[in-house]
Image 1: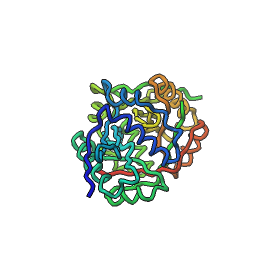
Image 2 (image 1 turned 180 degrees about the vertical axis):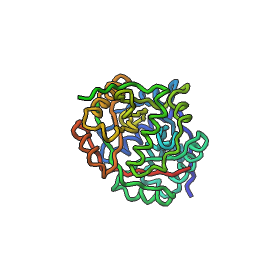
Image 3 (image 1 turned 135 degrees about the vertical axis):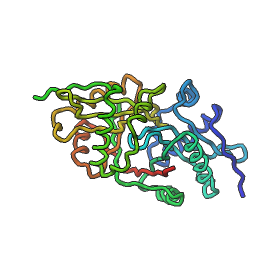
Image 4 (image 1 turned 120 degrees about the vertical axis):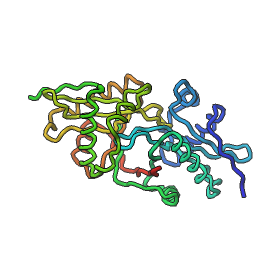
Length: 150
Length: 150
């Protein structure tokens, strides 16, 4: 058994977290989309009104996974916790870390009056879809994402 | 030509706005999903830290359309304006109201340092998809929505 511990984001985790964000973007075939920086993340996550929060997992002092959330507003449901990124380095999967992240996220969502936790998954990411289905999640395939870059 | 005016949400618009939210949910075949109330919307939109904002359109004193936004956080891009709902009553379409809403939203997004404006559209809602494509939007069909209700 591998021992892991889950901790809330601290400022000193952010450089490692940004590296994991980049690893995940590479897996999602969009590495050049990441224009975020450590400085911006420190301001956005630890400034006067933090706009995101999250958790890291450490194994033997090394950060090997992260979950980043922020709040969304649903005109149907009210306040919702949105899971922006969930990533565990490939060599540390199937150890229960993903499930442990979800346990924390669900508790946190309940404690902050959220009616729902939501996220997006790429249609070809079968291992992730299976993981979410095992958790009892609903996967809705009927929506497309629109965007305009400014 | 029909004259319309676009205004920012005020408290007294909210009961009409909630009716439009319900009309849109019916069009989206999910009328029972709306559990929001006028009281909750007044608190969420006009309380100490408003979590959404928006615009209405009036024609001859009647509210016939609305656009609701809030901010999201992208770990790739930073701050993003999210268009939660855009709705114009069927009999007032093709008058340029949708384009006018988008003009306001894009200006507002730029003025609040957003790198992008995003939204979701149902895969069978062809008139909406065509409207967004005409605006020059990117429509990404590769993501599914995951959720767990709490």
